[in-house]
Length: 203
Image (cartoon, rainbow, N blue to C red; front, side):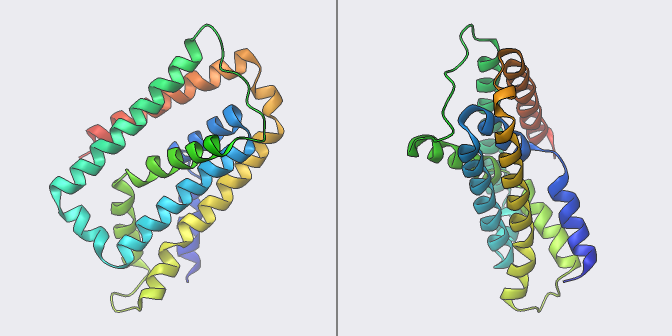
């Protein structure tokens, strides 16, 4: 593995996006364990996408216009729903009940599902993998070499998101102040809807 590839991966991981928003918001709403579950869901989805690209299925999805478009619009719907929910949480009269940092299995599963869906329904990630990996992996390389490179992004990315969940958990008491909480929900809602609109309008 070249250092150039690692630099690209790190830059992609550090770039703020939907994944970071989801982890931070879920950590504040449900505690660091729910934030960690969200990060895990994102990582699993990203590993699945990397696997699909490595075995050639990713290219078939991208080349199939109806399948690509169907996946894209599901992704748009997921982002818009989450964005509206965040905005509603910001403007509602009574703030949602503060959740303990020891979440129930249901809240953990919900965080995991949200992270997984946000990532798995974004076909642009498949396009990214398909454009990045061939620059660093030879066409005739064995499957394990493709997987090693494809999974480097979710491994480093998940580690970064888990660290953010832990850090956000340490300042959660401050972030749960009503004004701060409403501001975070409002910013998250607008950003998620913005990402949804961008995904809908990108060609």
